[in-house]
Image (cartoon, rainbow, N blue to C red):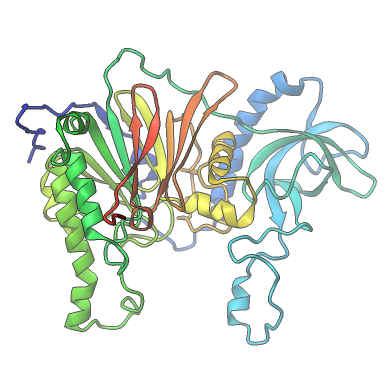
Length: 442
C-alpha cells in the first residue's frame, strides 16, 4: 500500500524526500556464537583505527618515531598507538552476583562506577603499559577506545603521556544547500506502550499532529512538511515476570500481545500518511545485544502493509535528500555514562564521534555480537544528524569538526514520561521540542 497524502479542505499535499538506508553494516548474517571470541572484534577495531591514526600522525608530530609497547626505551620520546583499558575498582563483577559472602557495598551512585583511583593502560599486539600523567584523564576515557599517545617510558616502567591524538570527526559530505523549502523529521522514543503510566491519549495527539488531523490551517500546512518519522526504541513494555521461561497462561499471552497490537494500531495511522522507521530498543521484543536486528514485520500486520513502514536496525543509518542521519536507541550513551563522566549526554555523544566509534564500551560492558572480521560500530562517514533515544530530557547542540564538519546532536526524551517528541528541519538542521499534554490547569 502507498501512503495517503495529507488531505484537508485546502488539498495540502505531503512533501516527499529521497530515502536511502545504510544499515547493511549492522546486519548479522548466519548468526553463530560457537567458538567465536571477542578478541577478534578488538583486533579488527585496532587494525582499522591504527591505520587511520597512522595517517594523521605526520601532520600531528612528524618528528617523533612510532613505537610498539614492547619497543619502548626509557626516557625516549615517541608515539604509541593502541587500545585503552581502564582498571576500575568499582566495576561490577559478574562473579559477585553469585557470591553469598559479599558484605561490603561500594559507596557509589548506582548509575556510575568511576572512582578517583581508576587507572588507564594502553595495549597493542606486543603488550601493555600503564599510563601516567595529567593529560589523559581516566574519568573521560573508557575501555575500548583507540588513541595515539605522545610520551616516554619512565624508570618505573610506566608511560608518561604528554599529548594525545584522537581520530577526530570523519569526513562529511557537504550539506545540501539547493533547497529553500522546509522539510521536517520527527523523532520519538520510549513510547512504552503497555506501561501502566503511559497515556494513549497523549500518543494519539502526536499521531493526529503528524498526520495533519490536528490544529488549524497553519498547523496542517506544517504537518504536510513532515517527510519522515523515526521511533528510536522502547516502543512497548512487557510486564515484568511474564517472560520467565515458563509456559504462559492464556491471560498472560493476552497481556504479552496487547501492547504490540496497540502499537501496531498507532503505527498504522502514521504509516498511512508518512514514511516511518521503527528501531528496536532494550525493552522491545528483539535480540538484546547490539546491533539489534529489526523487529519482525509479523508483529505489525497493519502498519507493515504500507510501503512507508520500515523496521530498522539499532544502530540506524540513513540518508534523506542527501542529509546523513545516524542514531541509536540509547544503549551506547547510557553505558558510557556508567563508566565515564561528562557534563551532559551530548558530551558523551560528541566523544563517540571524535573517537569514531559508536559503542566503544562494546563488548566489555555493553553486549554485542562477536564479529570476527570487522567492527560495525566504526564510524566511516560523519553524519549531519546524530540522535540517541530514551534519554531523560531533550537536549541538542551543534558541533563542528576541524575540517568544517557540522553535526546536530539530539537527545530524544522518553515520550511516555515527558510527552516530548523532537522535530528537526532538514533545511538548516534547526531543532525543537514538540510537547503533548493531556492535563490542563485552571
